[in-house]
Image (cartoon, rainbow, N blue to C red; front, top):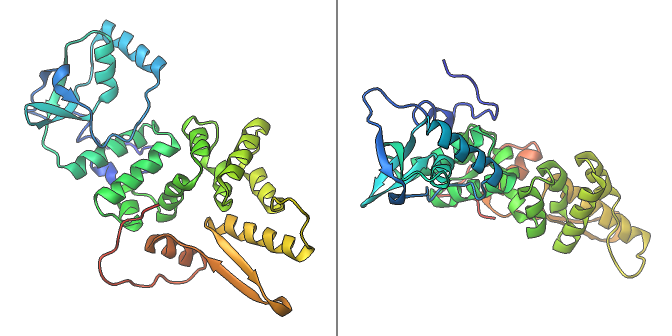
Length: 297
């Protein structure tokens, strides 16, 4: 009986990966394949490999060899990795010319899903790699957020919140990639339209070690940056606007009118994003007709 993974992949892709990828099937042949004939998985979501851990794995391979074969698929005169890139990299670093492997047939969808889930199960991906992987899956295979969430065994809001991290300023994304900040700490920053303001606040969060709750409180109290003081009414409008944007996770605009009335504009960036907002307001999702485009940030 399979044990549950700590990332909770549920009824989705967990069924695709173990033991299908991780274990050698009965009657399956293990071949020694030249490393020079193997190319990385084009759908590999992992962009960085820890040099120290890679060196440790190389030392282990020198001493004990590769205990678990990598999984490949045949492509032309060579092979593409399905899983096991760290082992291949470490084997090359250890001076090996060949690696034990099993060769299987996978289509592009299976390749991308397996690569993503393998890393998710091991908790190897940083938040930005995970967000980029979701986006690539959605765009490549025309997945809606709902379909993607179903395939991953996650909730759609969880997938949407992860993908929205790609809207942050590049420097803030770097903090996430380096694990200096968590998604919970930076998510309120999405309400800031100015990338420089996002970066400035992100630096403050790192320097002061602010918690996610402290960041939320800071955003609620944060006055709009300007060269001159504004009337109290304008300050309140700005505060409300930023508070609403922080809650909804999207750009909003308050346009005051007379007698305390006004207009609230809420932006959305796709049908999936609109459905996310509708669900937040507690309304039933409206059915849409025709083909739906993938979630694009």
